[in-house]
Length: 124
Image (cartoon, rainbow, N blue to C red; front, side, top):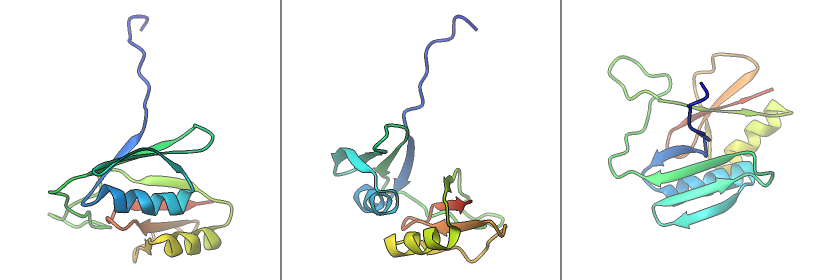
């Protein structure tokens, strides 16, 4: 498609009841720096420039349920984070403010929930 305009995915945006709080969690978890910092909008970028996450305050935010059952708020997306050591990375995530999900579908993956309830997976 030669007529296709140039499109570049700039970041993934996570809604939460408090953008500042959720961004602070991911700063601790990933070690990324703030690129934009407004009361209801924060952008974090990787130091190598190859990743970004944005956070926006959503007053009507409903925390997803993992794993969701019929009629429960389902996750719409999740983050997959590659790690060298699953146990130490999981401990780091918990120290940063995550919780380990009760349901773990695979032995080589650890599902965690961020402070706003978004699931994310650590995997080797």
